[in-house]
Length: 163
Image (cartoon, rainbow, N blue to C red; front, side, top):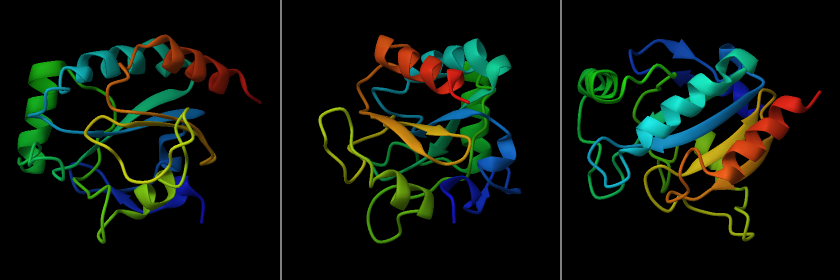
């Protein structure tokens, strides 16, 4: 089964898949509301809006595995993201990205290395994976890489130019 066909739940509880977004490229990010990196939501939203009309989407997966920094309910997360950062990109239900209950999407994503050749567990909140609409993982960016960093913009541009 392709990464983009794995069954998911939206933040509001509806069944979904990444393929259902109809995007040519996705930036999949594990997010948290009470993290020092939480302001990255601003850059993620700008990146999403910048490329949305070209078939790109940022996709958020709340995760509470890193120092309990995403303790809220789905409703609280949605409210926080909307009112604090104006998030319009798709958000999915809270999941585990590491460990024995790792969601199947992240079981696949974490097999892929970053620019230094390191694969394995997600290091912290706001780790980013660039994925094609067909589910191929193109790049992995560690948490401290800002959403609007040149390496991400260049990779997104290249992904959108494919076909």
